[in-house]
Length: 270
Length: 297
Image 1 (cartoon, rainbow over the protein chains, first blue to last red):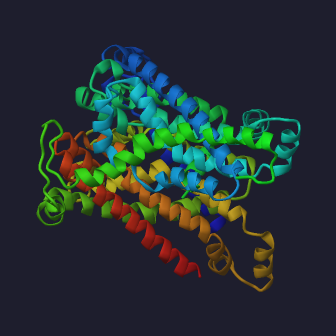
Image 2 (cartoon, rainbow over the protein chains, first blue to last red; image 1 turned 120 degrees about the vertical axis):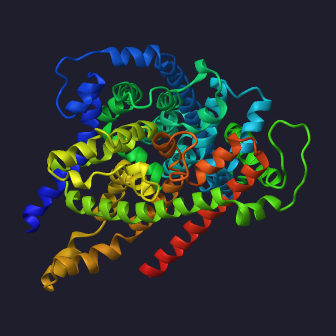
């Protein structure tokens, strides 16, 4: 009984995950009537019009560049400041290290929506709304607690003796950080980077709050606006979905292991 | 700090104290400070642009608790969403994990497939499911007609009584794979010998699950429950993608309600709502932790 149940359940599960995504992918190359007529079949006369319109009318080209800038900036900035802070927490003996760690990690318990009103006012006064720099800063702040949490755990596991040896050779903290901590935490940095990449690339809340002008939109925000403009022009919506998802899915296929551990480490932090 | 170190390296070690400064500066200025300010805003009637505002004391809180049907509606929707998602997603994730815990070629591939939706953006997932749920010619209704179950067709998100459950289904599709991975890690930590011993004692499939797997996978279950709860409060992007901005009353949840209040320039009131929202999540997490501790003690 269970011998036949298992493959049946798993096949059904795969179908439920894969079929809608396949319909979306195929649909990007179809016209709306073609999509409604036979959603599951591969496109019979493939067209690239939907992609063209998504970029031209939907502004996804600009949004793609903006997303790339914000994501790259926020991931790099977060990795630098979080690894420095985590190094401090791991290297400073006694209470100070734990206090800094506790303060930074406390942010995990606070949902982003708790602070949106004052955050908006603050960024607005600094002229940082409607700017990619503002998004980089706010994304960094949003992901900092998780990054410190993951990196802190790894940095603590580096044996003290390695640092002592380096200190005897006259290495200061910056050299110990660069030549001991960073090389040894490379796997953790990769894991964290992937977590940050997905969070920043997919973030909608802050662009929605901060961005007003069309040319500062990131992908999730531009995509959300499709819904009002193109309501049920599904092939166009689907082209938007594929453009917005392609980078993450490509990286997922290439670096699957890091991906799973990155997103799981992000989840298991609690 | 370190009395054992020599003067020279002590001076050097002082450089270490600059390491956390950038992180702390960003975090305190852009996050901790605004979070604390939310408490101050919550006591005012500020609209976001006027130069002046009044201190209204706890008026925002009493309004929220007694006179705001939209907030109560959002809280009810959120509660339904959370209960359904937590139960369905946890059960499904554990089931998949039990099926795929042994590492073979096939199970590694299947894990990757089930995890895939997690990497997509919420707006993308919402658009996929808009088509699945489209009443005219959408994927679900077409499929039902094709297999002769046309009578089961539905308007899905268009029915205000059930919309939130269809939202829950989408959320489960979105994140069950991620929680499956957490369960697999938990299951793999259970020593093989325990199962062998149980088998020697004549324990059947169910007893082995009940007396070995279930208690020993409890830490993973705790993580999954806590994370899934918080996640269902953060379904913000998914709701805006599925239900529009602002979403209609049938799909409005607490996070979208806070955002809508904010968009309507009721800054003081939105701050009060966001604090209640935060407190509710904290309360739920606390209750859950206690329940898990008691259940596994």
